[in-house]
Amino acid sequence: MIEDILKQVGGASGLGDKAAPLVQMLMQHLGKSGADPQALIAQLGQAGLGDQLQSWIGTGANQPINGDQAEQALGSDFIQNAASQLGLSPDQVKQASAEALPAVVDKATPNGQADDMISGLMGALGGGGDLGAMAKGLLGNLGG
Image (tube, rainbow, N blue to C red; front, side, top):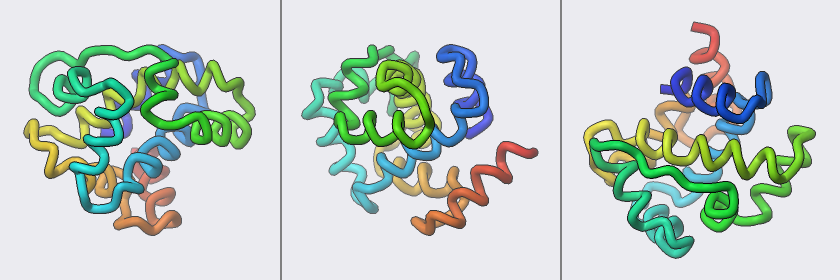
């Protein structure tokens, strides 16, 4: 799962080795809704991404979003913090997040079920909310 997302984000955005930490930050940010996928769905719906979200969860083609929509969904604080931590411009983070967000939600819901989303995100990171375990899981997945 992670490898596919990293290839998509890294290739489309030109982030190179910064794609992995950005995707990790994005997945952690999405996982903050806890075990309630409806909270995450509501968050993305409030950002005006209801139709796109349904396409990401479903088994069909994913509808794209732009950088501004990604910022609405994730919040400007996330964009600014990620840019600062990774040494990127906010526009780079917005564009990469626009590439990553549909892929992350899609891969976290392989059966087209929103109820599996949070556990899918946490499982992909290799931990149940423990940041160290998540990082280790992500790095382990990248290596092999």
